[in-house]
Length: 395
Ligand SMILES: Cc1cc2nc3c(=O)[nH]c(=O)nc-3n(C[C@H](O)[C@H](O)[C@H](O)COP(=O)(O)OP(=O)(O)OC[C@H]3O[C@@H](n4cnc5c(N)ncnc54)[C@H](O)[C@@H]3O)c2cc1C
Image 1 (tube, protein in one colour):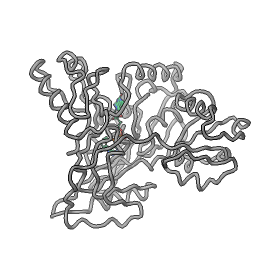
Image 2 (image 1 turned 180 degrees about the vertical axis):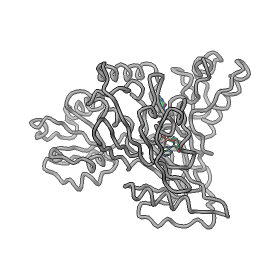
Image 3 (image 1 turned 90 degrees about the vertical axis):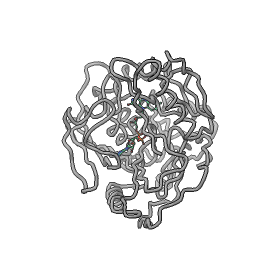
Image 4 (image 1 turned 90 degrees about the horizontal axis):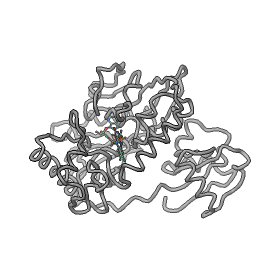
C-alpha cells in the first residue's frame, strides 16, 4: 500500500480486513474515536506516536488481528501503511530452479517471491515458492505439501520464515519452498493465565496485549525483541532477564512425521536454542502459562525500551550477530579488536554496538557475510575465541 488510507467512521469492516499489512491505529475512548482525523492532521501523528510508545488509550495493531477479536469499536479504526521498505538489491542472477518441483495447489502460494523485503537485513533473493497460509489448517496443509516434495530424488529445500529479524538470506534466494508465518497471528485466552498463541503473532503484541495488561512476569526478558512468537520459540529469544521458552507449557511442531505436541521442561531449551524443533520443521503454535508479577511491569517495559533506544543502533539489522561466548560478551571482544565501523559495500559493523552489522543501503549478502567472517577470524586470531553466529545464515 503506497498511500495513507482512512476508513471513515462507520466504514467498511470487510475492506479494512483486506489490508492485511496495514497498521491500524484506534482509540479506545469512544468520544475521541467519533472524530474523523484528516490526512496530515497533527493529532493523527500524535496518535501514531502514542500508539508506538504504548502510551495512553491509543493502541496500534495490524488489521488482521481484528479477525481474531472484532469488537464494536471497529468502525473507528484508521489504517496506515507500513513504513516504506529500504531499497533491496536485485538477485545478481536468476535462480536455476530445480526441475520437477510441483506447483503448490494453494491459492496462498506465490512463485518467485522476493524474500529480501521480509527480512530485517532487507537482503535476500526470491523463493521458488512462498506459501503464505492464513489459518492453522492452511499451514498444516502447506507444510505437509512441502514435506512431501522431492527434487532430483532428494527432499525439496524448505524454510520457515517468521519476522525475518534473525536471518541472512543469500541474494540467490531459496530454491525451494518458504512458508511465511506472519498471517497466523491469533492469540486466544484459555483461562487461568494460559494463552494459545499462533506462530506468526508478533512477540511485541504478546507483550503489549497480554503480558502488560495483566501485569505478568517476564516482560523484562521479552521487551523490544522484534519478530514472531514462532521465531522467538525457535531461537528461545530473550535476554539475561528471561527467555521465551521458560513461559511455554507446550508447543505444537509439524515435522516429517506429521505434527506432535511437546510438553515443555527446562531440558528442552537453552541459550538461543531448543531441541524440540529441528531446522525445517514448523512450530505451529504454543501454549503459554504466565504468572502475576509483584513489580509494575509497565515500568519494567519502559525501562528496557529506553535502554534499547540508548544502547542499540537503529536501522536495518538482525540485532546481535554473535552469541556471547561463556563468561564474556561478543560485543566487547569485537570492540577490543578495533572492528567497530569496519565497512564492506553497503554493510558496516555498527560504531554504536560492535555486535550489530547494519545494512546502510543496498548491502549484498556477501557484504554482510564477509563482515561476519572477518569478525570471526579477527577475534580468533587476537583473542583465541570462536564466535558462534546467532543470526541464521541461509546460503
Ligand atoms: C533490533 C533487534 C534486536 C534484537 N534483540 C534481540 C534480543 O534481545 N534477544 C534475542 O534473543 N533476539 C534478539 N533479536 C533477534 C530476533 O529478533 C529474534 O531471534 C526473534 O525471535 C526472531 O524471530 P523471527 O520471527 O524474526 O524469526 P526469523 O528471523 O524469521 O527466523 C529465525 C529462525 O527461526 C526459524 N523460525 C521462525 N519461525 C518459525 C516457526 N514458526 N517454526 C519453526 N522455525 C521458525 C527460522 O527458520 C529461522 O531459522 C533482535 C533482532 C533485532 C533486529
